[in-house]
Structure formats: structure tokens, C-alpha cells
Image 1 (cartoon, rainbow, N blue to C red):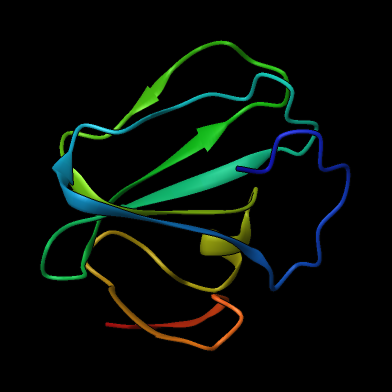
Image 2 (cartoon, rainbow, N blue to C red):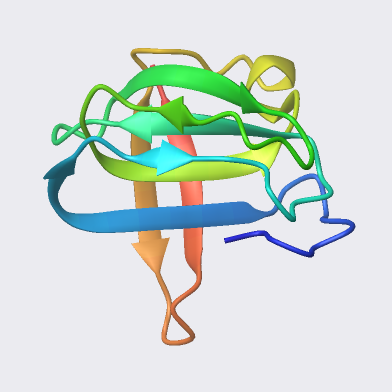
Length: 103
């Protein structure tokens, strides 16, 4: 994840793809950035967006997801992205994903 990262460009983040639907859990332990996390279902739609506080050991859980996207706190709100938006992504050879969002 983004543990020990102290800064990140506003348009960067981390994508987690799971092999099946799971009840994912995340926390901010050893994470210095305030983050937001979007949980994504099997239809590639965002089901929930939650906040992860820096250095927090409080768990943030999904109700079931196939993907999770961590971004800088406020990224989703600033860009008008909310639950129900569809995630569209393309992965390049370096295993980096370019993501966009559609209503």
C-alpha cells in the first residue's frame, strides 16, 4: 500500500485488485498521508468512499469489493466522483493503471 509514503501527486493513487469479492480492511498505520478509499464491486461501480486518517489503527472495511482505490484525501469529492460512478482502467506493461470514472 502507501505505508511510509510522505507525499503523492494529486492524480496518483494505488489500485488493489482482488481475485474474488472480499470484505477488505484498510487502516492508516505507518501511512503519513490522509487518504480516501473507494470500494468497487464486480460491475466496476464504486459502492462506498471512506476516509483513512494518517497513522490511524482504526479499520475501514468494505461490505464486499473486488477492487479498492486509495487516493489523496479529497480527490474523489474534488473531482465529482461518488458512489455509483463506474471505474474504467487500462493497465500498462509496468503494472500501472490509468483510471477514469464515468457516471
